[in-house]
Amino acid sequence: GSGWVAGIYIDRVVVGVAVAEEDLPGLTVSQTPTPSQVPEAPTATPEPVSTSTPVATIESTLDPTETQTQAAPTVEAPTEAPEPPTATATAVLDSDLDGVPDSADSCPGIADTGFDTDGDGVDDGCDPTPLGEPTIPPVVEYQVVASAGTDTSVSVLKPEAVQPADVVSSLAVGGPDSNMTYITFWVEGVGTGQVTNAVLYLPVSSGAGTVSIGILPGTSVDEWSLTYATAPQAGVATTAWAQAGSEVPVDLTGWITSDGAFTIVVSGAADPAVLLGSRESGWPARLVITAVG
Image (tube, rainbow, N blue to C red; front, side, top):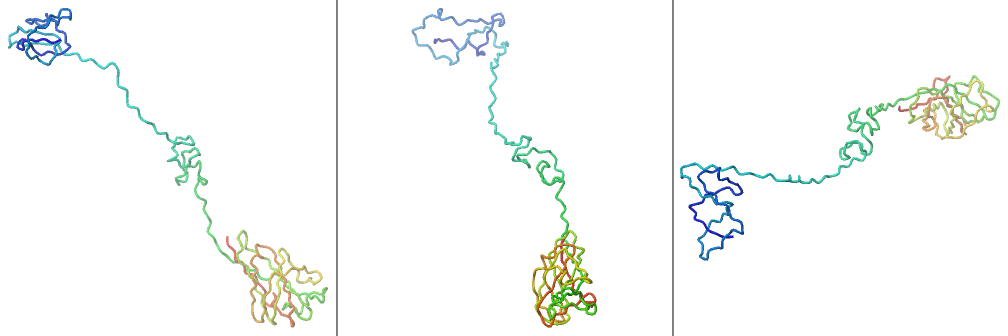
C-alpha cells in the first residue's frame, strides 16, 4: 500500500535485518501492521514520499551526537553451484592403439615399440632395416686373362690322324685337308663376379679368310690324342675375318660367363689354309674377360 511519514523522524536501515527494541536503547520500533490492521488511507493528497520501501520504521530518540550501532547484514550463499561450461572433445585417431596419434605416428597401423635403433626416425616396429641400412660393397671391375691351355689341329679328310708333331708351331684352318682347330682355355679368377665382356684374340700368322667360331663350355681336349673322329662338335657362335699378321678380336660376351674349361672350335674353307699361332710358337690365342663384383 501507500502511506506517508515525515522524513525527519526516519533513518536508512539495511533491508531485511530484524532489530530488537532492547538492542537499540532510546529507539522506538514500530512494526509494519498486517493488512488487517492497516487503516484506511486519508482522503487528503499525501506529500511525496521516499522511493525506498522500509521493512520497519524506526523513530530515533538518540541525541544526534550518540553513536547508533546496527547488526551486520546477512548474506545468503547460493543454494546450488553453477555448472561448469561443457567443453567439446575432439576425437584423436590412433588406429594401432599404441598411444601415439596417427598424425605423429611413424608406424600408423603397427604398434610402436618405442625404439629407433638406427636413429632414422622410423620406429623399429615398422623399420625394414632396424639396425641400419646394409652396407653396399663398392662395385669393382677387374680383368681375367687366360691363354690357351691346349691347342691342336685335326683334319676332316684324315679323321683318325692326330696333328703331326713337326707342324705344332701353327694351327691350320681350312686348306686342302679341311683342317679344324681346337683351343681349350681354363678360366680362373672370375669367381662370384659377373662377366660383362669376353673377347677372344686369335693370332693369325699367315693366310686370310672368313673363319667360324664355335664354343664348347665345360669341355677340354687333349692335344696329343685328339683326332677329327674323337673331337666334339660345336655349332657356330659367330664368324670373323682373319688376316695374316693380326690378332683378330672375336666378341664372345654371353658365351663365357664363369670360371672353368671352355674349348673354342675354329673352322673355315679358306685355301690355302689360314694358320693361327699356337702355344709352341709363343703366340697363342687368349681370352680377355672383364667382370664386376
